[in-house]
Image 1 (cartoon, helix red, strand yellow):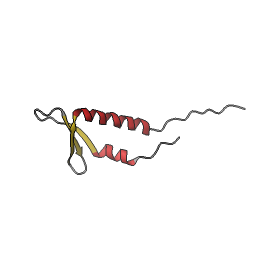
Image 2 (cartoon, rainbow, N blue to C red):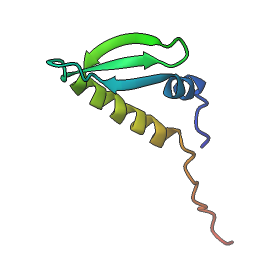
Image 3 (spheres, rainbow, N blue to C red):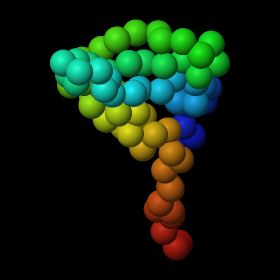
Length: 75
């Protein structure tokens, strides 16, 4: 089975970057940075940032082509 072509996933992966906030008193936040526009897109909680990374790993795993086993039998 061929995997679905998903260019939006590869574009988002290379365009956006999640950066933890290092400001004093705000270590529980993370920033979504747009590399193309060079600006902050959104501010999210650091806990949500962990889920975003897990989702990216999940998408990467499922986007990889899966080897098909050959189940033919000799006649």
